[in-house]
Every structure is written in structure tokens, then in C-alpha cells.
Length: 122
Image (cartoon, rainbow, N blue to C red; front, side, top):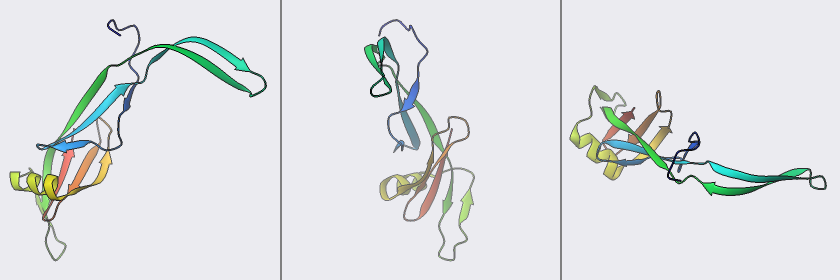
């Protein structure tokens, strides 16, 4: 749709972000579809809708690597108030997502690599 004739109804395209280059990227798509008709079936006790144009707009928002923890054998991780390059590299190449909360204001993503844990925040 070229002209915005509706409020976008953003929904996540996937449940986990794309993590690369020190960023966790959440992809969204608009779920709006124009309703052209509606019919209620008494037999099925359900309403069936006829749809027209659908919005194809996409959006994204980004969390950035905010801090890191270097793992220690004794369990007392060393915390950093920033994310060193080697931490980001370890988490993104060797790691996996341990936690992901897509809230645009208070969410976070936690990546755990072999030697580092990296926390991404909005």
C-alpha cells in the first residue's frame, strides 16, 4: 500500500532477533489487512471475513551490545560496563541466545559464548 490509510499493526516476524556486528535486530511486519466483507455462519457459530489489500510494510528496531561478563571457572564472572570486541565476537560466532525479550523499552538479549556472556539492550 503506497499511502498509509491505517495504523500499522506491528508484529514480530520471528521470536528471536538476528544478532550480528554487536547488534540484536528485531524484524517486524505490519499485520493489517483490509476487511471487505464479513459473514456469520449460524451452523458453525463463526464469522468468516473477506480480505482485500494487505499492508506490506516492514520495520526493525535494534538493541546494541551494552555490557559483557567474562566467564570464570569458579563461577564468579568478571563484569564489564561495556562489551569488548572479543566478547562480541565470541558470543556471536560461538554462542547461542540464552534469553530474548523483544520489549522495545525494557527488553534485552543475552548471548552466551565459550568465554563471554554479552547483554544487548535497547
